[in-house]
Length: 200
Ligand SMILES: Cc1cc2nc3c(=O)[nH]c(=O)nc-3n(C[C@H](O)[C@H](O)[C@H](O)COP(=O)(O)O)c2cc1C
Image (cartoon, rainbow, N blue to C red; front, top):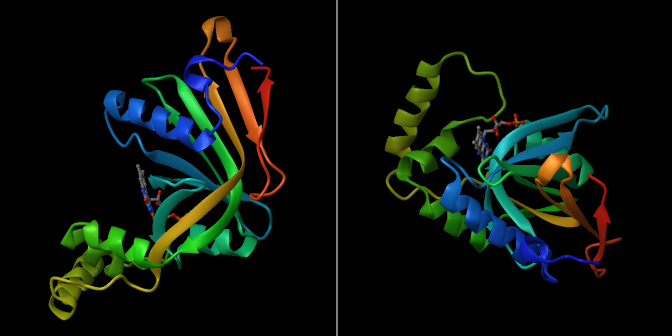
């Protein structure tokens, strides 16, 4: 199979890292933004943006509130999918797989790296729950600023998810809508990858 240029290599995580690095140089904002898809118990899909914080050797990691809608849906199914698209590069990466929490030292480290306001914001926001007013949220932040001080610990309800893919598709714009697509698949996260070129 002719898989040269930007699609070359035998490690899809390395390809994703290389594409993201290119996007960091060309995107005006949030090159690491992903549209994260989940399903609710009735099978109705849900999608929202989150920021991809790390591409590990075998997984993609993002952070959120464990009581949010997305987290509840992820934990009910143990699965999620995301797409990232870069207008500046005219490329997308699609990922589907299984999830687990990242709530160890790595999550503590990432939480600690955030600004104090963001750390207190994570404490203050009951993400996805109704909020009576913005003033109420700001009052919560003010209260937590006093009670938590300048080194708040990571809330137990806030942390990461690690998505281990069973499918990754790399897509790049081609002339006359004849785009290039390569889909990497594996039965389980323990198996080796198979690669197929797909019709656009
Ligand atoms: C560019 C962008 C990045 C975002 N990044 C995050 C993120 O990293 N984590 C997060 O919990 N929410 C993030 N959000 C907010 C989510 O899109 C969403 O509003 C929130 O997480 C609640 O979603 P849920 O009710 O489906 O759980 C981001 C939104 C945008 C537009």
